[in-house]
Image (cartoon, rainbow, N blue to C red):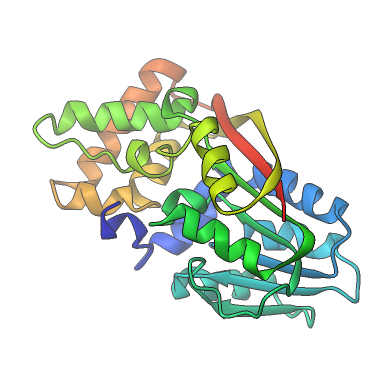
Length: 268
């Protein structure tokens, strides 16, 4: 994975949270929060928390005595998450690499990650770290996007940009967010890390936006796809081209499409 795929800087964190989160992440954040809360954990670790969409959904569901450690590799994303969350004595914010967690062994009841494993440069190492900091019998819960063809807006934008830049198409969406969807590979990686009792569920949801332009702006300017576009040409022209492609398929006004992810749970 190129280093630029992990760069959430400048205006990207705020645009990501205000546009991408409601577009595709919020519905899965609610599902993740429900799953984690149902395990009734006291000590919880969230890795790759991004701008804190799951944090905001989970915190109200946790008991008063819970200890909730929220981490991300990217400090600007974590800063925005903390700002949006507000004061909560149960929550500790810490910049941390999911592949080298700064916590002692067997410290947490649950470790979870929302749409972060795809960014791990060594997923087995990341899973081993999650297992190391889990208590015996603890749960690791995470989700990843399914293949890009099952996520209409991401596919539309990727195809539109390939049409605009045929010699060197931006492939961030297909390469990274939608690049780790093989259930057999995920199961194998978890088993190599020492996990057992692994369940993998396919979960389809609906993504909605007020316009095709809104979707194109979110993907082209609120994700690291922006870095690839700006290296090739005009960001605004690319956004408009993607918007036209989405409008052709879904209409100009309020638009709706399918999104799909895999939800994985494993026992230490």
